[in-house]
Image (cartoon, rainbow, N blue to C red; front, side, top):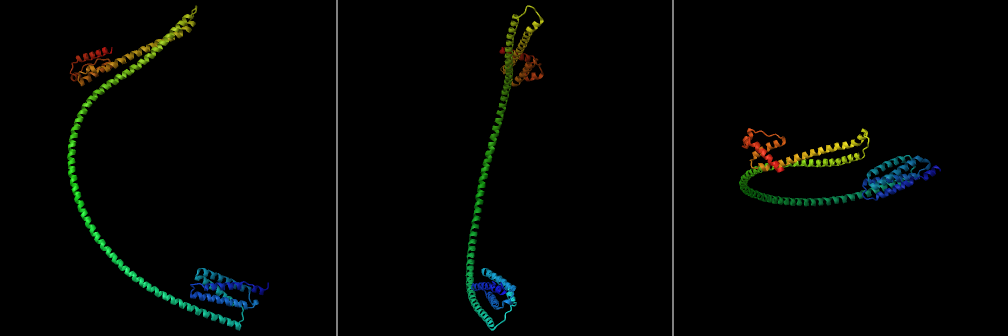
Length: 412
């Protein structure tokens, strides 16, 4: 492709038309300021002049790099203008103007001989720019008048609002004053009522305290009387407890004797059971001894030898020895049973025979009698026993012997 065809088919022309279309859309937007509209007119004028120069210049005098740089700058300008249309950010226009300056520098690099019709075109562009500027000034003046009217309206509304606020403030002050007066009156009434309540409460508490003191005095007297009655009752109870203690001692002495008698009975029963066992074994062994002797007698040989004698009579003799041992053990257990039965009866029947004596005398008799029963030694008379019992030393052993004989007779 030749150099002329490359320039003729270059996309820079389409990019310039696209950029002019975006500028036209921005000019129709609301809220565009005068400065922004002047900047849009500058960009539009530069693009128109650039398009005219590219169309009129000789392709052989235009470098490919130059036209590529112009195309890139136009593309960047279009991008920033699209961003401004979407966000209304003035910084996007400033960025676009920086690339417009680059385009102006590129225009000086293109050779373009001016002609009369081209000068007319520049004149027309200047006239169009002045007309646009005059129209923009008219629009600006109209907007300024509308803004001034709006300011006046706002001032009037602000003055009216200030008056309303002042009147409301005065009304609020009156309301607060009225509330303060009512609060003062209520507070004074409440304070008076509270003082009256405190006085009534103090009087009622004083009366109640006096009643409680009288009641407390009565209760104190009643408690004192009850304490005296309880003290008398306690003394009576202590006296009764002393009597009960003496009776309990007597009962415990009887229970002690009964428990000793029960112990001897338990030992006697145990000896009886053991005796029965030994007698049973002795009987069985005796029967076995008779059978062994009878069998040995029937099976005796005519000729006597020690070997035959030992073989026949050794077992018989051993059974006889066992019979003798178990019979002795049975007799021993019978003797133990008899002694325990005797001790049981003596201990259990001693109280009725000494009931006629005083308590101290009964204790001394029991002591000496128990010593005699358990040790088998006759107690010797002493001065203490003579003092405590009031019985002569000669009569006391006789009394103990008599009691023992009576117990033995009753046991038989």
